[in-house]
Length: 438
Image (cartoon, rainbow, N blue to C red; front, side):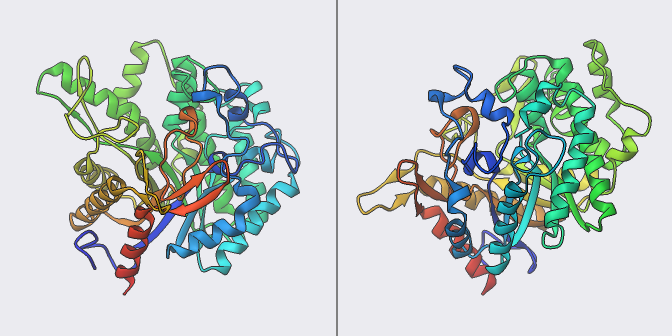
């Protein structure tokens, strides 16, 4: 065991992660329907350089070779998402068997290589027809999600052990419905808060559906960070409280305790906004979880005037590098909620340097991963129940509103030739896993 991983248990597992729209391409083949990202990325100015995920990493056509690549890294787990419009093109009605067959072949290929498939049902690609009907602010979308979960389980439930319902509902709501920076591009805070509740209700309905089918490893993934006040000034303290309320507690409290935080509800009421809770909803939302996935990239210091820079180095996304915030977050989640955790995403975008012999030198990413894995190990030594770490991302991909300009991958992708090349960080990660096993 290295100093980086000191304190991690012997059964701690390692993996990599991707999402469907960011890598698959094949946007209009084999019966796939339109998603909100197909539509949004064609809106002028929505995505850098007018780029989209039509081709992306062409994973849909290159999947067998990509599974070989995954296995070559020595990981035990691969987290991927299923494209809802590929499985159920309009978000309701019969299954598209050709779309489901792709995921069946993917799961078989992973299992053949000894890699555990970790399935995420929703990573932001809502079928466009459901958005046209009202999207996540509409209660019916939660019931459509329950139906979709059952269809995917019908096909893959005999081989997939771990099921995640949603990825980062904060992004779906605040970026998709409040700021308009993500699909579907709406800008209405009240609609965003309705979407919060219906995403959580959809999670709970899907969780109950999967539980009824015997799923014993079930979770949800949230993006979270630590929120601290810049000073003892009441305005600063309150700003940190509000950020934590809308970033963490509005999700974790109903999931674990079956209630929304009273201060968050009061804050919303002061803005003339309420959550559309119906009797029985919170009991559904708080269906017991086996794991909470944690996606961590940065932490923030707040003042009454907004987020305050800590003067730290930043990634290519402009996000400050705060590994100690990772440790604090994991210890806080253990203390306040006491649920098993897995790091389902952690990584960084940097402007990678390609040297003459084709090697990709990304020492900044190696440093980022090393410091953040060390931060996880420190949290485990402090008592946090963290069971695994999945690096984001397996390979460079479509980075949503940033298009292809931001590279998070351990593996470099030449988008013109679709050639994959292991970066220095991929070799480092592979060696770290190998050393831990030996």
